[in-house]
Image (cartoon, rainbow, N blue to C red; front, side):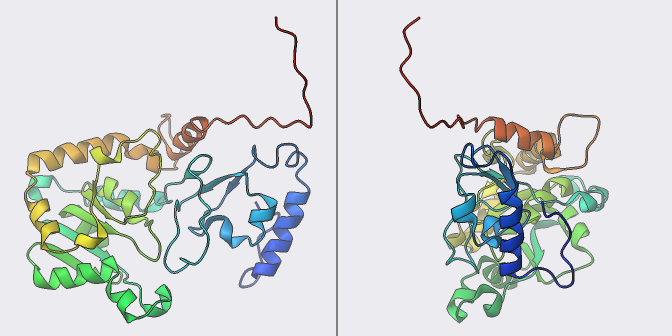
Length: 292
């Protein structure tokens, strides 16, 4: 962590690199193993790319980050996530959890088949041309909603009724935003709807031990058309309720708020790290030992 909060509008890339270089230089054991036994937390989806010198200073260290792969609008950046050593963090949404629980209806009482409400990136945000923008999943969901308004509610932009919309939907569409991950993934589990993840390259938290196929639906970006709605309508309420119940059983791993139980995001992160146990010992020499 930084030794002091940045002042003013924040740090430039040069200032951030200078400060982190100074901090890393003072770490007493980082050279012993080349940083392989050091953990760095990057709360931004850009991960260590915020730090321009990370490839030469800490390339072997363990990264905790909400993003497991990076595309738009930073698709020109080289990938930094290594599933062999790094761990995807769930996004922090503890403060909103109660609002979703409070608007959570029974599946049989929900009036909407599927919904999506959120910002739709424009050309400037995506750093792409008009064709690139039109191909974005969120833009295509808006068009699909106009064609099938009785099956899909899609709202561009923020709405004060967001929690109510999730709580009244059987399926909550989770399309990628500027990058593959979105906080909406974790919100759905507290809203009691089935997350329909539309993000081909997303890496989800705790895939090391959590079977996401039992608690969500993954849908390809290339098929955002009527086939999506046809498939969702074919799933009976009884099956939807089973998926939701399984999600309720494990959603504690997405909440950071400490409680009396051992099920929370912190414990899950430590478990994920333990599954990536590595031999980080480093020495300049060794010799053959006599057999015992």
